[in-house]
Length: 343
Image (tube, rainbow, N blue to C red; front, side, top):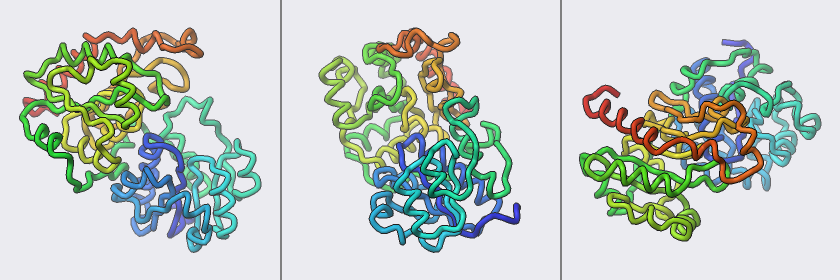
């Protein structure tokens, strides 16, 4: 164990679900080196249900509360700014945290951090989860794990929460339970709703039970753009019905999840479920940077370098070029393998 490891540390990641999930392995790795280290995760309130379910996180701190009261950070020996946040960097300085680590590519870290790490996420060939490990260098750790090492360090466990009766009843069927999360709140390139509809109709209800998830706004968007998806036999429409903790509980009780590059896809991967992601080959959105990392995670991506044609246009023809048949075959292969205990 490096002699410089602190006994208490804050990991600050104040952005979205997928980013948070891919930052949890930092805590797991640090705990493997120093089991008694007290690790606090500072994030947005809405990501708290995920963060609190990692056995490697001791305490959660709400971003909004810390901005109002920087003293909440007092007593910690170090903080890692895994996501650049000027307000949090200022708060950490006010709280007099002795070691404040951030990337040198944010000007305000030159003012409020006192340990700078020189790397660029935008131009790196590393995965997002690997890039987080670069922040450990000021602690005496110069180590980038392989992608296969990451899943052991999530520590994510399902919450014990009640699901709506119709969803709970559908989970009791012996069919392969597949969560389908077609939208991304605009954060990713998306497969089309008509392709999702065609896929679910092709798979049929004989062997599958489908759970369509998303926010209430995304549910309304699906209703407006392609209501046929909601009418596919075997589809339980869960949009707008689940909080983040309930979504995590649902994914934990299913067999897999299908989505583009979204937070729920990373949740499924972290829980060891089939996490089948549909991706564009476009940097920095490509799987090399954002693929789900898990023992049953898989991605489908067009074998085309760069995807430059779609960089500034929607729809993305490269992601739409991934055929329904290819996705169906991947799901069927996994389902059959899991049915005989091969997964």
